[in-house]
Image (cartoon, rainbow, N blue to C red; front, side, top):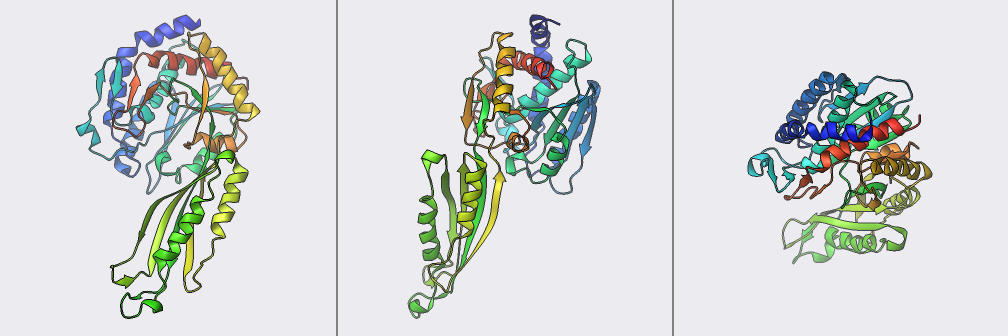
Amino acid sequence: MKSRQLLQFFEAGLPDSLLLLKRLVEMESCSCAKAGVDALAALLVKEFSARGADAGLIEEAERGNLLRATWRGAPRPVMVLGHIDTVWPTGTVRQRPFRIVDGNAFGPGVFDMKAGVLLALLACDAFRRGHIDPGKEVRFFFTSDEEIGTEAGLSHLREAASSCSAVICLEPPLSGGKAKTFRKGVSGYRIRVHGISSHAGVDHAGGANAIAELCRHVLSLQAMTDYDRGISVSVGKIRGGAASNVVPAEAEAEVDVRAATGGDLNRMDDRIRSLKPHDGRCTIVIDGGVNRPPLERTDGVIGLFHKAREVAAEFGMNLAEGSTGGGSDGSFTASMGIPTLDGLGVNGEGAHAEHEHIEIADIPRRAALLCRLIQAIET
């Protein structure tokens, strides 16, 4: 099918697509609400199966179940990647229901990334109806805890991606619809200081102030930021103490680290783990570590973007690229050496914000781009 006809197919189906998107948004799937995530995953198994894919669940005991679906074709497969969890607590949709205003669709999770899930279903529908032949096996994979670190889904994702020639990640694009060809790596730490409590008036000298010890490290941590190298360190939350008249025996801080390269992320990990107490009566315990590696702008990533740019032009789209400090599951596949192009979801704004929305008119274009890019990738 010619590109224009493919686009017209998705345009004609837009009313039904919006009904399906509404249903996806209204099935709330907060990362920590397993029942909600499981219900959405079960629905999507039915939806993918109805479109001719071989779909099933990867069951998890504590986190939500993962979803995988395969459109059978010639090897070597291409992966279409995303997540079905959102950051929004159950009940948010009652406060901010799905609604359409001035050509935009609003609702919790619609941009990040229920609209991306919709694109995967639309592509599968186009395959089933014979509007386009992907020419290869397409492996759809959706994690259930991406917003809180992909702890449950990571091993399954790596296994599913290991034989893939490329990964297309349907996370939201950057402002203006830009694809993401670079993401910083992310680490997270909890630094706990154990001191010695004492009465602040009666035996002040006998105490080892955990808060004072922690504060000295807060300053040294913040000073590790190096903008020229793309490294940032942010102490985002601190706790400590029991009462104003007690020298505090406990204090802790939560620390966010971002770096542009895997090497720098690992070097920062070494630096943070080497922290030593200034007051020898205190001890320091460090938990956490690297959460997501960077998605580095490798030759493979650039090549995949240029192919997507060529395909986008068929639909009148001027696809641009950009970078972000946030992480995604695409960072994991990129770190495996698999060319990964991120940010190919539906254009919009407001990820993790109350004004979260997508541009309805972009749905057919992005669905057509996804289908043609899958077809165009050489395996």
